[in-house]
Length: 115
Length: 109
Image (cartoon, rainbow over all chains, first blue to last red; front, top):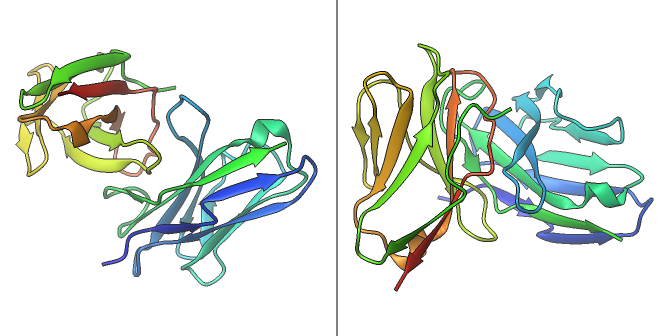
């Protein structure tokens, strides 16, 4: 079956622009996670959804970062007024259980470059 | 902060076993050991996890010491496609995954 998909795969933004990154989780997966991965580092947790509810957003680095999952399926991570330090790969993961009880399946990521 | 320490990099000859160590000396009784790997330009991929007992699946084996302070991921017959960054993570069920920098495994022909 289809895995987690993300779009776009690559995004170049000028500093100050807003961007929206999309994640399509595996169908039926309850939990959805967003991570940020800087070059040469491991992924860092940003936020977690259980269905449409955002239960943990402790990893969001600033109020310029906003995530939503309005119908409990597709999720969008929005970054307003992008800065150069936002350049990273943004990974989405989903799992069928609650809050990380089960292994997470990751998408390929969106590589964001802010000029 | 990651609760594990791993070597920065390792090499392994193709066809040989790759043994990747992980130290987690502060692990608590209800924390599992998970292994993920990340091939270049892809998202992390789940490999295996365990609590106390050794585990084996179609990808790898996980050997956890009796005191649970360290573990080893074994890829029995490494191939070039196993070249990746391997992450060892300890967590309780429900906790977020905290990834460290991992071990960069290079499988050499």
